Amino acid sequence: MIQVIVNGLSVGAFYALVALGYSMVYGIIKLLNFAHGDIYMLGAYVGFVVLGALTSWLSLPTALGLVLVTLVTMALTGGAGVLLERVAYRPIRHAPRLSLLITAVGLSFALEYGVRQIFGPQPSHFPVQIDAGSVHLFGATITIARIVVILVAAGLMVVLALFVAKTRQGRAMRAIALDAKAARLMGIDVDRTISLVFFIGSALAGAAGVLAGAVYGTIDFLMGFIIGIKAFTAAVIGGIGNLYGAMLGGVALGLLESFGVAWLGGQWRDVFSFLCLILFLTFRPTGILGGRVQERM
Amino acid sequence: MNWLQLDAVDVCYGRVQALRQVSLQVEEGEIVALLGNNGAGKSTTLNLISGFVRPSAGSLTWQGQDISRLKPHQLVAQGIVQAPEGRRIFSTMTVHENLLLGGYLVRDPAQIKQRLEQVYDLMPRLRERSGQEGGTLSGGEQQMLAIGRALVSGPRLLLLDEPSMGLAPLLVAQVMRIIAAVNRTGTTVFVVEQNAKAALQIAHRAYVLDTGTVSLSGPAAELAQDPRVVEAYLGGA
Ligand SMILES: Nc1ncnc2c1ncn2[C@@H]1O[C@H](COP(=O)(O)OP(=O)(O)O)[C@@H](O)[C@H]1O
Ligand SMILES: [Mg+2]
Image (cartoon, rainbow over all chains, first blue to last red; front, side, top):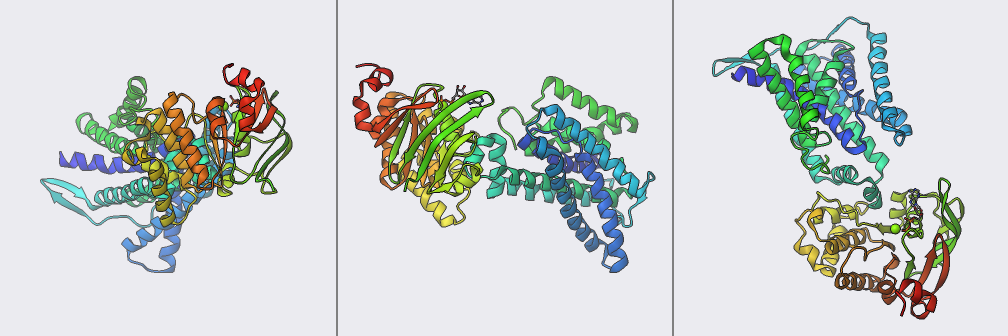
């Protein structure tokens, strides 16, 4: 039981980290950024490269090295997200929604096959793994890696929640999500704030990518595809556009999958998620926390 | 020198021309009213000054500088601040947070705090409601909040788009008193109104906009006596 819950939480942590970027971007410009899962993949590869470079130049203890690499990766994927928005989305922000969607899908392919071009179609092996063994808790065996994932994700989410709730820039983001014109009248530079949202969302996805590499050991150019869809599902479950909804949706989806797998077997994992997505889209498209439609982010 | 000056301005939305050869001035310390019926082009005029629409002809200057290419946030930084039509309060944020957003470009926390106090002193209802979500306020309170929010930015020119819209007569009078009080503290005001009677009571000068062109202008007291204004905008007499 505890085993199942911890497994669910750690998978849910990945979903939540990626869902946040999905949801924040949707909240602020109503774009379903289908390239967002690939930023997670990009994060794993950036981490892979940086970690390789770092371990060959200096010999840091693994834990410190990983923290450093995660921070560098977050900065780089954050920058990549800002760049994508600037060159691909901003010029067509006022075009019909379908153009944006098609652009997002195109970007997704470009990222996937761009990375494949550089690193090849075969999986790469992450140079460092979180492999500190496991602990026994109430009869369950829990790997340290899973605990690390949960703690890191929780930490990042607390920081994000405080940022959005308490700071001037966080308030500006919420203001744009509620009423972009009124936000402009407050003197908010909407373009810059949108860039900031892309930076934060992409940095979180990048962090998730590095963690995935360090936990699962192998990475490949299509690893962002499935998690992109799962994160979208999580965002919808929680209420897309809603910050806490993304966190809640990620964790809920992780747990749901974990219990589903425990009862019915691993082959049911994705069936479960997509059933959830369809049920929510049909019966409660605003998600768990989206009751009040105007409340975004 | 005129603070704000529009000279023979045209504004078009696609093939619809909303303003035609509009010229007007606002000078430091004044309350100037822009009157006109629904669809006359009043909001377009304010959105032009705030940088949301561009003139297709004519010139728009602020303290002698061309401002027709500036973006809305740059105009706020210049002190040109608008409380828009329909209030546009951030409905799920508290009154306090709405006011803080008004001070978005003010970098000195002490100054924000001081201005919040001034707004709360001017409109004590907002102080009582400061922890409440903006969307739960009454129409009159929302209008006060919209004005208060604009004041926190420290405007040099305050633009108001139909502050009386949808308010009961008693509240209209109260909002007009607040606008006059704001003006007495040194803020220049350019107010757009369909309610000519209310606006002419506080304005120094006024312009009448008629399907995109200025048809009349002059001191508010004179316009209030002008038979054309009385007949068209003050409900006969
Ligand atoms: N965004 C827009 N697109 C097209 N036409 C518009 C737009 N905004 C206003 N108009 C037109 O411009 C004219 C003036 O509108 P507006 O400035 O809102 O008038 P007012 O504020 O005096 O009621 C109207 O005919 C209106 O239909
Ligand atoms: Mg109007």
